[in-house]
Length: 98
Image: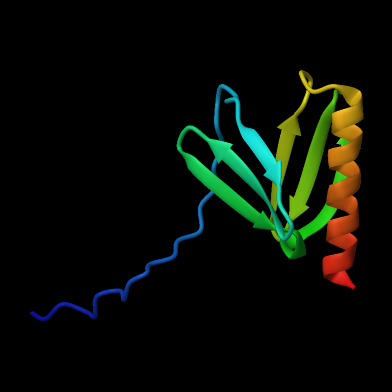
C-alpha cells in the first residue's frame, strides 16, 4: 500500500485561537502594520488586512480583519494615547484601502 503525497512546506493551516484567561500584550503601530507582542509570539497585522476599527465603551479597540476579530483591552492606557492610536489605525486602514 502506498502513501499519498506528503504536504509541501510551508504548511499553512487555519485555526481559531481563543485565549482564556486573557493575556497582556504590547502593541506597536509601525509604518505599514500593527505589531502585537504576546508571550507566545508576535502577530504582525498589515493595515491593508484591517477592514474596520472601532473604539469600545470599555477603553478598548476592536480590529476587524479579513475573517477575524482582535480586541485590545486598553483600560490601563491614558485616553490621549488611546485616541492617538485609534486615529493612526483609522488613517492607515483608509489609506491602505484607497
